[in-house]
Length: 114
Image (cartoon, rainbow, N blue to C red; front, side, top):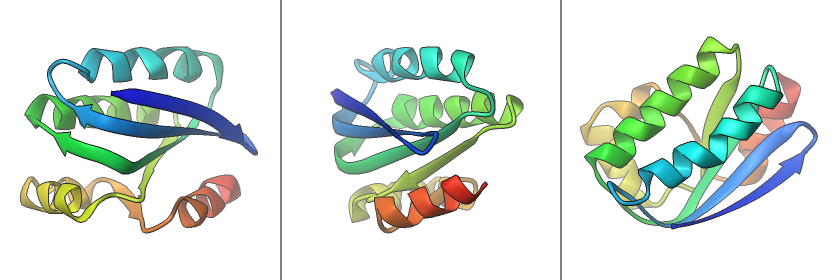
């Protein structure tokens, strides 16, 4: 997995490429740790446009990250989620708790306004 981090108007954008699975979940958590501790409230946007696969540990990691960010009164949104990942989110009912946008621009606009 590769993570590219950028920042726009106080929103931290993570473009994730590859797989989010048992082998890469710790890398994802590590990437968030610094930002979530230094910036309150933190606004996180995960662009999953190039995520090829996510397993149950990967999904659990996303839920855990969302919970931690919300405990700090922050926000975590998703964009560009591929259809196969949306399907997994739907089956597992995560689509109901995740804010998912078609494009990064749509998600970014809403996060900036928060």
